Image (cartoon, rainbow, N blue to C red; front, top):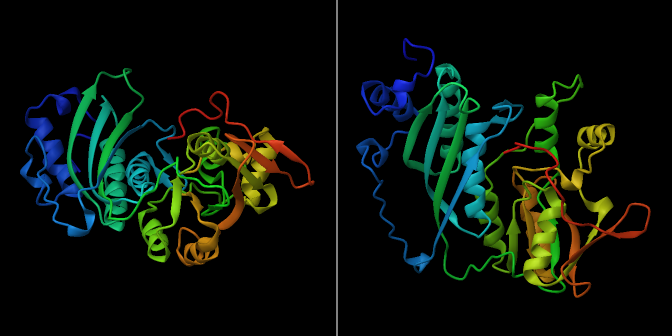
Length: 341
């Protein structure tokens, strides 16, 4: 830790304090031969004959409130979110870049905790952080810290995964319980006096996806159901693929704590955000094999087959309810929970 315990505007000025922040803290956690050069861009070499020229690239920003929550923080969320966006097209994540917008007066101790969690998460996913940027704004012009991140991944030959690839007869799988992240954030944000061990499911899913792809390449769609939850994600797939999707409500795994909080506050867990789950649409003949390998993975222990792709009504998601009826499961309208990622 530096002697000064707070971020100053000078930390973002490009001068001595900027260099000290980068060298004493950021390189301490992210340092590697590419980043250590501190060039304006990181030079990476891709020599993978099996890739056949396919590279996935993604970018996102993170403004979650509160910054620290059970199961993670804004830094872990940024790394996981970018890795997962790459994994959802079947890419093997390789490199990330990160940019920080920090409010003057932000705690250096908290900044170091965020950096440490980012390093730990990136290492666990076998990913390097190779470039970035830091800006400091006047007190009151930001809410403590925002993070933007981008990522590059390699797509092996023969992989074709897209939200527009769902086919009639495909099975729909979820990798685990839904709504954990959104309800953990809400409980922390509102300081709800609830006796619960509920944590965010924030996790990097690239290793889970690669295990699934070892079983079969007949994985047509992958999506991480973040904002808008499972319901909105399924609607996105149905619309992009011009198909219908029918889901069996009792088959969707939901933790008791999540269901209880949702019942108490009037939320539907199918619309609550996740940060460590994926939806997979796979060919019906391989669904059980894919499910089996998912259940063996630490991030897929509660995986389940929850529905199937149908021919009609097109661009519509139907929910077979626990009482036996069927209703339309529409896309989320408006913002249910602000600043959950």
